[in-house]
Image (tube, rainbow, N blue to C red):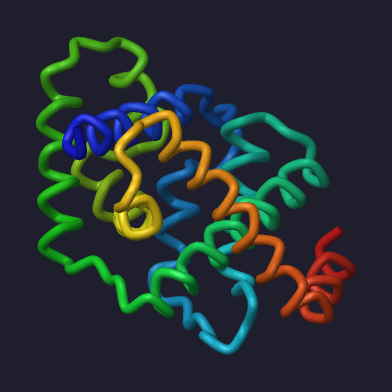
Length: 195
């Protein structure tokens, strides 16, 4: 089941990227690579790099307006950060080996799919599938694996899959709400700056 979720996550991630930038835009790959040497300050609620990278994706790939893209990016990143901090609090982690194993499974599966959309996507992004996973999706895969571990930790005593999902959704909402409350000043400053 865990491998199926991992493969499904990879496929969904690639499919989400099917809408591509227009020919006159800087390619998504070039944009992502431009952040390679960026320093991220871990004291920030969210880094400028994270916000800009995801905003660019939502704006240029998902074709949202700049304001919609920025709001969606900030909301998504705040939710991810809340989950990440709770996982850290519970001493959960994901090793580089776990990330690489998942990436290898996802790449192997993606290579088996004869998908013109996938081929077109990677060409438009100016990336090979390997570059996509190593340059762009690596930390996103780590985050999803960490979220899966937290899900299993929180729901470990529940047998019914539907009940597990209900409990997880409720607990995740509590985590996010608590994170937002604890960081409301910084979050409001962040929203004023970007929105």
